[in-house]
Amino acid sequence: MTKLWGGRFQKSAEQWVDEFGASISFDQQLVMEDLEGSTAHVKMLSACHILSEQEAALILSGLSTLKEKAQAGELEFSVANEDIHLNLEKLLIDEIGPVGGKLHTARSRNDQVATDMHLYLKNRVKEIIEAVAAFQGAIVEQAEAHVDTIVPGYTHLQRAQPISFGHHLLTYFWMLERDKARLSESIKRIDLSPLGAGAMSGTTFPIDRELAASFLGFSGVYENSLDAVSDRDFIVEFLSNASMLMMHMSRFAEEIILWSSEEFRFIELDDTFSTGSSIMPQKKNPDMAELIRGKTGRVYGNLFGLLTTLKGLPLAYNKDMQEDKEGMFDTVETLAGSLPIFEGMVRTMTVRTDSMEKAVHSDFSNATELADYLAAKGMPFREAHDVTGKLVYTCIQRGYFLRDLPLADLQEASSLIEEDIYETLMPATAVKRRNSLGGTGFDQVRKQLGLAKQLLGH
Ligand code: ARG
Image (cartoon, rainbow, N blue to C red; front, side, top):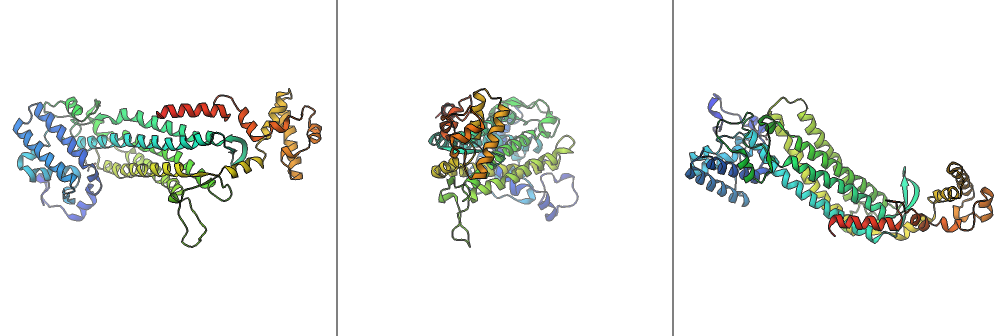
């Protein structure tokens, strides 16, 4: 088979070499974007009188036939035609004859492929933002149901202070809110047209890049033709934003896994989002959460893969850049899969308020309350910390918690302690009184929840 670029060559290609160089196995995912880019290009060429109206009409009808065939899954691509761009050009020529060869006037695959990637990513990022918002919706729903549910809060995975479970869950709302903001902001840089940069230096034809960009719905064009075809920052940025988003999901997944263990018993996942063991009949494994935690590694790999690919590249296009696609597709797919799964998992999980209640009454997470109590009565906080620490030690020796200590023992430690200490040491009191801005106090959490719902438009 003769190549579209075969003129200069004496020997015909060998299939095994073609197979190594081809990207059609994966870049066929860009079929719609490529057709859209070509359609805009032809309309622009016609408007600029580079193609006659008749030529343009013929090519446009050929492109729309290809689009219909693509939608019906009827296009047959070949490795010999290397990539989606040459495959479609060949199919167009087969469809409408030699005039199809005019499509590539004033264009190169270098600006073409970059245009396809910009179009693709712009739409995918918008879909991902919507999926993140849906996930936030499930978080907010659970948070609203559990503002008054108290759990031990942890630092160093050691019980630290009692908190509202709603407060804990809302943390993830804010993390995801930042992810959405980063993704939205990145659209500015994705939403630019490289089309018309040609191979690297522009073109001798009197094209109108802005017109082509407006046909494609881009809000601007690259100012430098070399930059237009060399730039893959927008993909790196996407992979970086995706990595951060996956990192957030992975931390949440880790908590889901811990909470559903027998050791915590804080939640039970719905059967739909759990799996059994092939040998141990009692098992109910949080596989989906583990898988999302695991996939995070692959997304980071995609980010580092592309950064490394680009690291030593001279301007402008180099074939290395063909390696930008699989990691990007894989990351889009991973996010598109993980977000709804996580959303469903959170929406349907059962919160075991009984276990949480038990946990929070049988620990020392109220020790800060005692120290604060003494400090509020004038004792320097450092001293209050020491007095409380010694009382905790006494409790551990005797198998007590702080509220089990008789008043006499407490007063022996400090005469500032009075009967009201028992109320102060109640987990609900501890949470309620943390009413500082952004704190876990129930009123603060309700305020935070209101803001979250407002941001989601709920
Ligand atoms: N398949 C190529 C890629 O994905 C398209 C651009 C090829 N350009 C070239 N000059 N060989 O990067």
